[in-house]
Structures are given as C-alpha cells and as structure tokens.
Length: 399
Image (cartoon, rainbow, N blue to C red; front, top):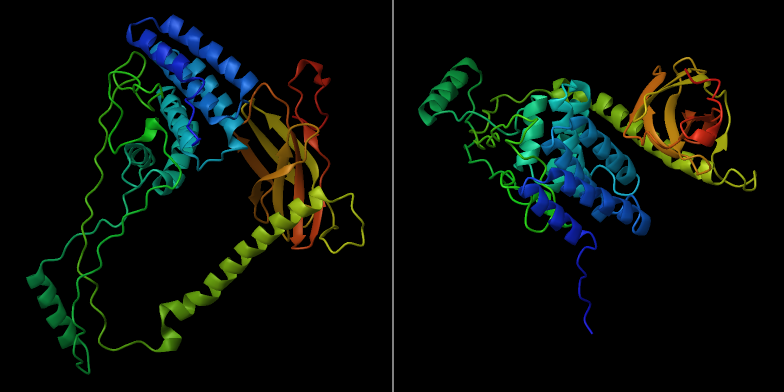
C-alpha cells in the first residue's frame, strides 16, 4: 500500500483557533493554542516544526490582543527551542525571526529588531527568494539596497564617451565589440517545502490566517500594530558593460595582483578557523580516549577570569586573553550535563561575546576555548546559569 501523508496532529487546533480569532473571541483562541502547544511539546517535542508553527500562531493572537510582551515571550521560547535542531536557515525559523523583528519594532527595541531582521535578510534570499515580501521588508528596515540595480546608459552617450576615451589614449587601439550582458540569474527555489506562512510573493491576506491553519507572519491593521505597505522589489535594470581601457595595464600593477596576497591570507584564515572548530568538536567529544591517539590536544594557557551577565533570553560572556592577541576564541555551550557545542567564534584581541535566543526558563553552561593552532586548544572551566529553583546558589564568577 502506498504511503499516505498524515495530516498535522495540531492542524485541527490551529483551524479552530483561527475561526475563534476571526469571530473576535481572542481569549478562547489563545486558550486553544496554549493547550495545543503544551500537548505538542509533550508528545512531539518542543523543537518539532508543527509545535513551533502553533506557537507562532499563538504569538500572533497575543499581538492581535495588544499584548506584544506575551507575543515576544512565546516567539523567543519557540526560537530557542528550534535553533538547535532546525537552525536559522529553516523556513519555519525564518518566520519566527521575522515575527520577532516585527514585535521588537513595535516595542521600539531597535537592537533586537535589527538582529531578527538581519537573520531574515541574510538567509531569506537563498530559502524564500530575494524578492519575497518578508525579505524585502527585512532589508528595507535594515536600510539595505537591492543588488544589481544600475542605471542604463543611452547608446548615443555611450558612443560619445567611447570616442573621448579613444582620443585621450595612445596608441589608439580598436575597442572590443560591445555585447549585451547575460540576463540576471533567478535564484532557485528551495528544495525543502516552504510553510504556508511564506508562500507567494506578496504579503498574507488581511482577513486572518490561511485556511490550512498556519499563521501569517504579519497582519496589518490589527490593534496594537500600525499597518504598513509592503515595499515593492526594485526593478532589475541591466546596464551596458563597462568600457575596457585600450592599453592593458602591466600585470605587476593590476588591482588583482595587489589584492591577491590579502585575499589568499583571508581565505587561509577562514579555513584555519573552520578546521579549528571541527577539531575542537573532536577534542571535546573524545577527551576520555587514549592520549596517544592522533587527535588535537588541549595545550597552552586557558582563558581566565570568565564572567557572565545573564539577561534571560541572552547572556554576555567576557574573559581575559591568555595569549595577548595570538589566539582566536570559540564559545561553546549547552544544557547542564550535555556535551558542549560551538555556538560562536571571535578573532584575536576580542574578549567578549553576546549570545541570544536562549530559553529564559532553562539553565545553560558555557566555556571559552582558546585556539592556538589547528591542533592546540585550551578550554576554560564551565560557567553555568542558576535559573532553575533547584539549581542552588549562582555561580561565583557570574556578575
């Protein structure tokens, strides 16, 4: 018998909540969604995409009820739960990031709004498409200009410019034929399905959620949030190709030859950091193995005076540099009792790191690793939060 896809176990609850919200009963819609989220976390797990979509719809109901603080809390919990499994490039996570940006903008928290919209602007074009309304809105908020927008030069003006360039150069050499530039490439659609909250090039309808129960990312016109017009994508205007200089420059004086050492050095540095992070995971996972095995070793002075400021959904870590600017640093973290995983990296001379998207009700442990070479590391002692009632006194190093 052929495999038949099963409907979402939470779809009925989302559809019922949508009908209640459309009828004006926001309180009952909120109760239905809260109960569905609790059941989904117990049966499917807090990082299941279906549970995250239901939480996103619950946040939208909070926004319609003019309660942006509750909407932000629900979205931050959903983002923290899905970050480990799905990552920032998943369509569901992009929808949550977009809603976080909208709520932060409404609460006039520009820092959080820029962080949330920044994730949509960075990962949205590859997943949703560069002209998707959510990507356009995020880029508009960040003040980014659409790529490949140029002014077309009239043919007569281009010919006059070419003649003037030829008169000023010696010896005179024939100009290469002007060819039309290739048509702009269209980004491929993502291979994985996009949730209904992101389907289509335009914004969601103002009449409520789609019929399938998935929440839209933004609902203009409801109480507590000012509506806005979706910006239209900028037109793609291809210009004539740049006029080549008649006399080629010497190879030793070319811009490429001057920039080549810096480019190669940057590529080598990036490759080194990537290798270091991979090697660090191997070291942290196999610290109990035979010391004679052929794996990177923990050596060198470790970061000291590690301190932490706990803000609930985010923490700020700082430490003392034991290498005087000769080592990079990798920030590792995880739940107490679990294997720590790399969560960020900073270059030499940097001694602080801001980590966002945490669950304010859960405890986390962190450690700072100094990366001296691709095979030599030194890790600081773990530093843990003390949020749970039974976790005891706060860590002494916490500030």
